[in-house]
Structures are given as C-alpha cells and as structure tokens.
Image (cartoon, rainbow, N blue to C red; front, side):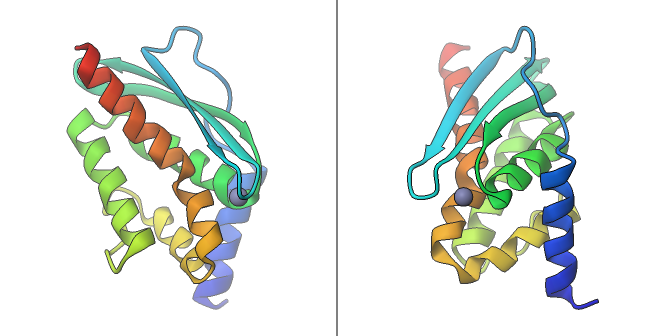
Length: 143
Ligand code: ZN
C-alpha cells in the first residue's frame, strides 16, 4: 500500500466511523464553523476543566475531509491541556498551509497533508481546527 493509499484509508475510516460524534450535554464552550465553498458544517463542543480539555465532541455534515478532520481533532485534543491543544492546532495549520511537519500529538493527522494538493480542500481540513481555535479564544476571554 502506498502512503497515499494509507492516508486515504485513514481519512475514510474516520469519516465512516467518526469518533466523539454528538453534542456534549453541558459543554463549557461550543463553536460552529461553516465552509461555504464546500457546504461543510461543524459544531464543536468542549468540556474544559482544570485548564484541560476533558471531553470534545462534534456534529456536522459535509465532505469526508472536513468530517474526518473533526473526528481526528476530538480524539487528539481529549485530555490535552489547553496550551497543548493550542500548539496542536497551530502545528496542524502550519502543516496544512506551509511546510510544517505533522503535529507530534497524533500520527494520524499526517494523513490530511495529502489534501494540500487541492487548495480548496485545505479549508475543509482546517474547518474544525478553526472552530477549536475560536473556542479556546472565547474561553480565555471569559476566564
Ligand atoms: Zn469540504
């Protein structure tokens, strides 16, 4: 199996069996993202306690890239201290928009870099991460 095929497999697997899909009953914070180019929608809810993301969940619809990216995101940030979650989001953005290496937090995230060849799809991959960055910024303002 080529690396490309492996990456596609990982994305498809997350799309078909999304992790942490749903809404948290009492989230600390929830944000939404919309990508008009593709029609993707993601709603992210986070339970934050002790400066750490205790739980993360998402709902949404759209292309496999946006939904797989959201699924991976919730898996990666669950349990992360806020500073680490912020660093993961920046690293992911740097990978998708430049030459940054895949975030160290989770090797599956590397699968999304295959999307970089399709600039329109980069927005799909980033959508949930933008929602995460917004959520963390909102939380900070509130605190
Ligand atoms: Zn999309």
